[in-house]
Amino acid sequence: MLTKYDEFLCHQIETTFDHVVTSAREWTERIIVHIHDTTGRFYLCHGFGVYPNRNVIDTFALLTVDQKVQYNVRASRELRPQPDEVKVGPFSYEIIEPWKKLRCRLEDNPYGLSYDVEVEGTMPGSEEDAQFHRLKGRMVENMRRYNQVGRGSGWVRFDGDTIVLDKKTCCVERDHSWGVRWGASVSEHEEPTDVPIGHFHSWGVIQFEKWGACYIRRELWDGTPYVSSGAIFYPYGSGKDEVRIASIDHDFKFRPDMRKLTSGRITLSARDGSKKEISFKPMTYVCLRPAGYFGYRDFVHGQWKGPQWIDGFKLDLTDPQILREVSFFDEEACELRCGDEIGYGIIEQVISGKYPKYGFEGY
Image 1 (cartoon, one colour):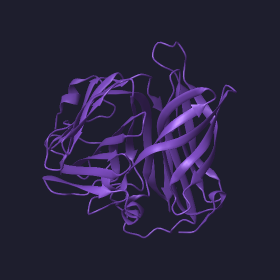
Image 2 (cartoon, rainbow, N blue to C red):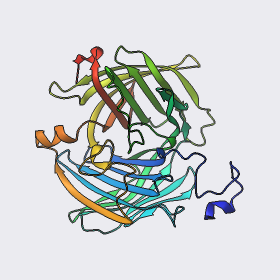
Image 3 (cartoon, rainbow, N blue to C red):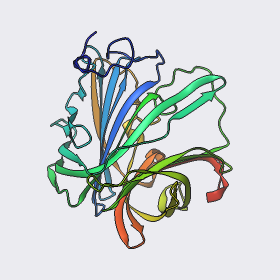
Image 4 (cartoon, rainbow, N blue to C red):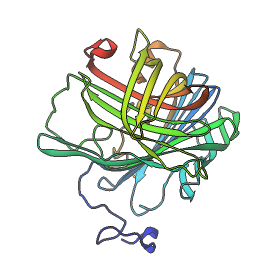
């Protein structure tokens, strides 16, 4: 089947763009755009996932306001016969100019949330190291990801209230990943896997006026790293090249009643000998479980929901029981400090099971 992408001189395999090189059902291509202000009033996430070997494309929007309520809208459709349209129901995602400008939209719908946001990239995208993992002899992860920072303009509307976005105060961090993805979508495996003793995951994308950075760090329960990469990058027109990160150190603080960040410090040591010591304090957050990460209310990434499907609901984040139910895989929008510089960005962390460094001894 031919698509509009087949017009371009960018083929990488001896076939068309309507399918991927492997038949693995976990093959996923996903984008997520994080949009938040510099005061902590709101945090909007807009995401799409494409699953060519499941014939599914799904999407979500999450909005938290004043850390009190989270709006959630999710949708899904069969991928074909429109595999080249990044649109599901009222949701759309449009690349206007690669690396420079894109548009995220959620049109009017019954669930009380809509928006139209234009994102301007302010620094070049940065590619993470490849992530590859085998489990019991089988490849379960083989993926790539890049990250980029920028600014946003437009509007967000919820329950009749409207927030107008200003590039001076609206920060954007986004990522785009593709490949065989492990752990965050419907699995092809039927055999139960061993529960790990413990696992630490942290990922962040940050921006200051004169530079930005991204990192990913995964460790076993005893601190042994098995994924560690990142980069420091600079604004368009600066004339400075990206510098890769050689090592990542972290010192996080958590709420006493749950594994949720309250503050911390990250040290990024670059391959050129330079070092960035960054302290952070969360301003606001979104809980990603309702978006389909690991499943919530009968929705998980890549799940077949029929030719067309959409739902939505609100969550009261001031209710401790609800927060405990949805807070596992969270994104924290943070104010950052590096010396005299003040910046903003997002930090994502998950600690499951035992991790003695931060006092966690089990599930």
